[in-house]
Amino acid sequence: MFVPCHQKLVSAFLLLYCLHLSAFDFLWPCPQKCICRQDTLEVNCSSKHLTVVPEGLHISARRLNLSGNRLKTLIRRQFYGLTQLEELDLSGNIISMIEVEAFQGLKYLRILKIKNNRLKIIPVGVFSGLSSLLSLDISKNEILVFLDYTFQEMVNLRELNAGENDLVFISQRAFVGLQSLQELNVDHSNLTSIPTDAFSQLQSLSKLRLRRLNINVLPNYAFRRLHQLRTLQILQWPSLETLNSNSLVNLNITSLVISNCNLSAIPYASLRHLTHLIYLDLSYNPITSIESNKLGELLRLQEFHLVGGKLLRIEPGAFRCLAHFKLLNVSSNRLTTLEESAFHAVGNLQILRLDRNPLTCDCRLLWVMRRRFRLNFDGRQPTCSAHERGRRREFRDFSEAEFSKVFICRQAGILERKLQDVMVDEGTNVQFECKVDGYPQPSITWLSPQQTPFSSVGRIRVHANGTLEVRYAQVQDTGTYLCIASNAAGNDNISASLHVRSSSRNYTPPNFFDESLVETSLPPSTNSSAQLSSPFPFDAKTIVIATTMGFLSFLSSVVICFVFMFLWSQSKGQIKHTATIDFVPRSSMGGGGEGGDTGRFTMKLI
Image (cartoon, rainbow, N blue to C red; front, top):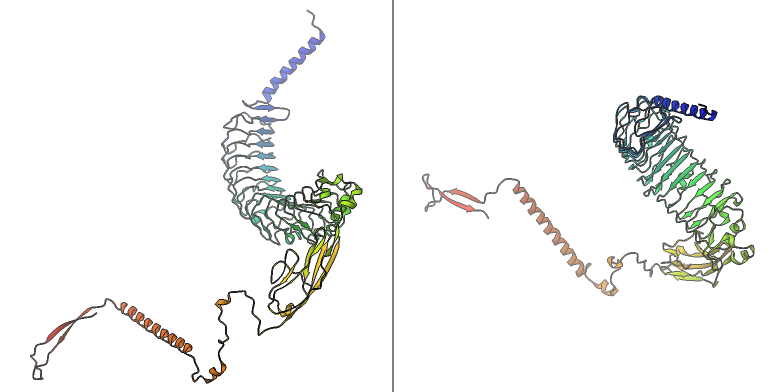
């Protein structure tokens, strides 16, 4: 029988394939319920409802996936035969105990995942033999404490994820041996203080993330000896209100994130040490202002993010001296404007995020409009929201012809320039008016004769309408006061003079307390001749008061004596209330005899 050549080739191919499968089965046995791939040397036993580690795993396996099963315990030398294993995934089981040396023999293991289990403690020696491990994930367990030398043999470990545990304490020497660790994640734990001593063991650490901790103050020298640290992330600490001035000292970080915390002001004193800082993110803090000339020491700063805060004002010179500044993101705040004078050089600015702010489109934002096609708004166009002619219009929708009509300002001016020259007696209340006009609404500042500004509180105060009030004027208040009205278009000022006459005899002191509780030192008004004719040096009222005080003093002395006697008698024992007395009565003749009868009577003490 003749067989075509192509059929012979097909038969030969099928024979070789069957021989290959037989060799595969022989050389690469696969446990039941698992999927084995010889080309990648991988054994996948994920989500197979396994309660124990399957037997029959081939010695050549490089990757073993046991995630999503029902494993409870790992015994000593559980994987001892898998000498070539490089990656082991035990995530998503119910492991509550791992015996010492459970991973002994896995000398080539690089990646170990034990996340999302039920571990409460890791005994010292569990990770014995894992000298080649590079990445360890023990997140989402119930671990309470890291003991001394827990990770001591993991000399090559570079990444440790220990987030979302119930950690309350990290021992001082817990991280001893992690000489190569570069990235540490301790998220969502119950730590109430920074484990500074433990962190100081991590000489090679370059990235540290601390998320959801219940700490309200970042103490001084919190991260000492971490000279290789480059990225520090402090995320979602709702109690964090303060950074001590030396909390970040000696750090060489280039990226700092402190977001979703409770900082009400930028921690300038803490940041000034970070001369290598390039990226700064303080988003989602209730910060209200960026002050001028406070960030000048961050010479390398390129990006600043403050999203979702309560930012009301960015002062002129806020980013002065920052020659490399390229990106500002202050979206979702309460800014009404951003002046060009805030920056060292707007020509270096590449990305500007001003969206979701109630911007007032006037001359202060004209510099942004002129650069609107060169600046990158990151796909979020700023919108005018406080000017009738520009309401709800994106910046890109304005034509240059509209600039002179919309983006305008009117110089601040004093409305009533009447002379205010007041002369009053000491103790009088005085008010000076300062009514202004301009667009945008001018700010009003009152200066004292010594050129110091007044605030809205104090004896001399500035009211919301610009009026200066001097309460209970004093002689030292005499002088010339200056009202300055200013806005982006210019300034105006007006002076007011105050002269305060001294009136010490008739002056009534300010009513800072209840005068009804103070008795005057002046005698009542009486006829002077009657006083001179009085034969006695004291009046009847004085005599009565003196007598009464003397009687009370005498009475109190007597009472004290009686109390003392009572206490003394109590200390001498029980008091006898009756006494029997023997006596010899006299004879009727006035003499007595030896044999005379004696008498006796009993006396009762009351």
